[in-house]
Amino acid sequence: MINGPNSLTILICTHNRVDLLLRTLEFLNSAQRPKGWQVGVLVAANACSDETVIRLENFKQIKPDALALDWFEEPTPGKSHALNSAIPRIRSDLVAFVDDDHRVDSAYLVNLCRAAEAYPDADLFCGRILPDWDGSEPAWVHDKGPYRIYPLPVPRFDQGDTPKPLALDSAIPGGGNLFLRREWCERVGGFSTEFGPVGHNLGGAEDLEWVRRALHLGARLQYVPDVVQYHYVDGERLALAYLIKKAYIRSASNVRLSEDNSTSGGRVPAFMYRKVAGYLLWVLTAIKAQHRRFYLVRLAAAMGECRGYHLRHKDRLQAHSLTGSGKH
Image 1 (cartoon, helix red, strand yellow):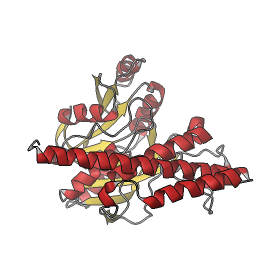
Image 2 (cartoon, helix red, strand yellow):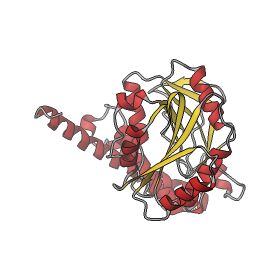
Image 3 (cartoon, one colour):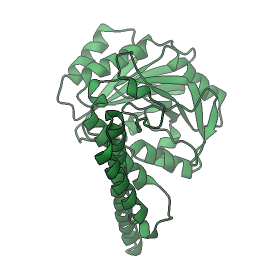
Image 4 (cartoon, helix red, strand yellow):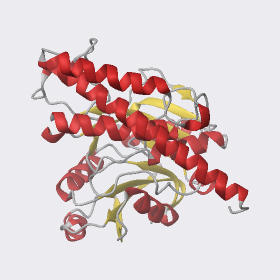
């Protein structure tokens, strides 16, 4: 692994998506190289049963001038396990997270390293994640009206064209386009295995939970809009079943992570039941397909919120029990 001053490791966790992974590696190697920086790639093959390792070896052999490439296998399923196995292996100044279904633009590496130099007081950085639309997607994904679908089926993080610091009371980025100074990995600790995807399910929020912990410890987070990654779009994400499932799971995770203490004991508040009932009524009475799709997704999100309140209450009871018993 690379190390020393002005060194950068690109960390990619992957599970049985070798074609997309190699596509990501091609874009990384096509990007402009930052002068005065060492750049390498570390791939964490998480419970892979496809040809990931074989094809990584082939990639390294046929591309001798590519970025330094290393990989390892983490047998325990779950992205958080892969991240926690990868971090101790990294010795570079900077760590950048790239998902295996992302592509980077041609200036990604240059702009990333430039940001680290331009903001010496920043500890964590995030850039933009944009859906990699190709024009074949349905019109509704671009709808900005009252019936727009959210969360979007394809991740998007865009805080505008102006660099700025972000804090706990602003939008918090996930790990898809996060980069940071390595010492913060040790200060914050591992990624929670209670969150995050296992295989290709829709679990998430392990990155949000980690960033929140970092900010609570005093980390300074800088948004850098010219560091851009594009998220691959596959047809499955545009299906109604996917929209509903994602809205439910991600809403549950967001509420579970919430620090709002306004509800008694963290239990599901009464207004949430009214919210679920209201969306159910709209689903049953909607005539237009656009409206029905919107209300089905909102209903799933509301039910996910209820699930999140329940999980948060259980988390707090468990934490209280451990504190009361003197366990740490």
